[in-house]
Image (cartoon, rainbow, N blue to C red; front, side):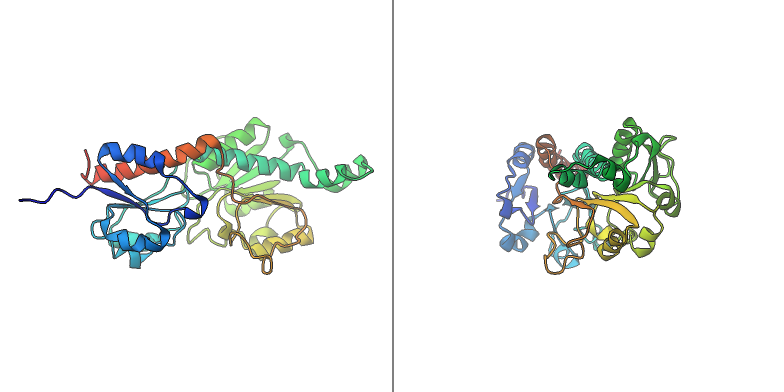
Length: 320
């Protein structure tokens, strides 16, 4: 008697057990297609690698050693827009496709980036502090804060993919001029002209990072980059923390080279209070990696994880 065929299996390798995260939406889309969803505890996940056709990775790192334990790998899914939690070179060497979730976060991250930009350019933390005093010295604020009309300012975007272009569209609707730098996107249209990074830094009133974390973007915003920015400019990062050398950003803010910075991501998350290079730095607004947070996008996040997993299984002929 022959044994029944093994069910195609999607393994959530590092489930977000510390958040009591539910995978019911993924299950509701995978099981009708005959796909088993396996969600072990993190401590037991490696024991299930041999069962997986597709592995979903939240935080990583997922490297060559774990890839070697996969007996029938059809793909790795990064549970995010970024793909830095998987060793891309090891996956390529092993012939394992790596996919991300590129669509679900486009609108929400673009909106959060715009929110941080406006807070930075209007100096909202300083204005909030001033409004809490007994004397509202409007004239001093005008002199000290350097606030200007949006229509007179240029926003430079590092990374002109889906999110970068969605952000640029929203910024232009408020009157900003937008430029970008991105070697991976050679054609962004006349409203978002592409320039060299050095030119973008020199002429932008605000620089917004929307790039993926890669070998070439890691540490891109270093001491030289901040020194090349327009004096008094603002800086926003809603991409990945390690793109920024945080000690260099701290120096730029303390020296007054930069007027303001707003960050949703950090090099280490959460940063240690004892070693945080941005501790007590002036003119800095932080949000805790929440650019992706919105009720509607949260559901889309789960749905896209299932859809991408199904696409990998179909392309390999494991499901119809």
